[in-house]
Length: 522
Ligand SMILES: Nc1ncnc2c1ncn2[C@@H]1O[C@H](COP(=O)(O)OP(=O)(O)OP(=O)(O)O)[C@@H](O)[C@H]1O
Ligand SMILES: Cc1ncsc1CCO
Image (tube, rainbow, N blue to C red; front, side, top):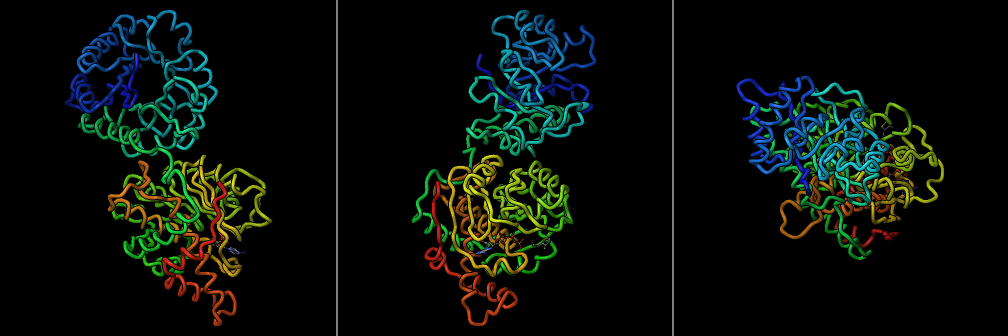
């Protein structure tokens, strides 16, 4: 039996709002697009469980949706359900298989990669992975997984026909992030989402179910990997970075920046010099409004003053298909920053992560490159191309690593950028301005992609070529620095900064295309 696991409803009679019957609530959910129903009754006695299962079966048949019973094989047999869902401490799969009809569906809850592996070898038809996020429906005893780790946990399913759904705190607002976090390096991802309260506790279960179903269908129909093309040439990239600057000037995107107190003014000025509009806003209360305005979002946690604002801003940006650029300043410096980076990357999907070698090393859990506070030290990675490619694959985004040479990867391609000037290393916040510039280009290309009819790379969280945006964002800064450093009025780092802002504002698409020193490494 081929089951569509897209929207898997787990019942929760105690959560249904007053005035709505169980049958009404279930029928609404089925009309909204639920594709599988699991009856879960943790406190009902056998007679009551059987009654609920029979009523559920009737509606499932009407809507041609399979019925799964939680834990109770006897009830599943009694109502001729399509299968059972087992917990880790329930009856073993092999025993259940013997008791049930040959074609019965058996699913099992898993919290770790090892549990998934065991489920596969025991012959499960599907696994329910969770809890992904915090939930009030169930007393959570296993550790929360977070959306970001789902791909790793699912690896055991890579070459099998075993299906997967995620469960735990899933709502229409985090559905896409969770689906995106499950994409494995091979491109395989979750088969669906299991939901309780977002549907059952809603006064309008039909609308709630439809919202979730739409998110899953859209995810499945879209390109689920990266916002980049399948292939590039040096010439095509040179042309594209110039074109990207043209878009920045034409679209003049709003670039919302939550950045550190050291660089706020110079980053806002760099945004204006590029031809865009900055807004430096940090309060959680204003994030929803700001996310509705197309453009880019930068989250730079250099002085970490508004963690809640950073979380909410990224979540709203994801929901509005706005690119999110993450600059994990000094992430290797303290364990607090490392924990916070993980928390942020679980809360939203980054479009681009940009950092110096020390920061990229810390995010990659590598000790090859050290950092001193916010600065990277030593000679860098022996294999920088693999470092950026691996992190891009793991985080499902574009990664830019800065230094004397810059490296950018979308998880497939890697480019080496050779522009820049040592004076950039002699002022504070040049890396932060690179982050601002990347967010500006991402914002411009996503706005242009939304307005244009021509085919552009896109995924469920962002439209436009974000690989090109990251390359162009870095190159605009490095090329403006080269031009500024040659000016006779530049005597050192103090006179360099204003000259650099001048040259950024005067940079043309033609000069950017002509001067960009780019090599496609893979
Ligand atoms: N020695 C150098 N030669 C050429 N370009 C450089 C050099 N050092 C840094 N850059 C350029 O400066 C920009 C910032 O990179 P860097 O790695 O210094 O950032 P960072 O350490 O994050 O900076 P900060 O923390 O001060 O914001 C990049 O575009 C990079 O190409
Ligand atoms: C110096 C410094 N400290 C925290 S953020 C920042 C700006 C450069 O990264």
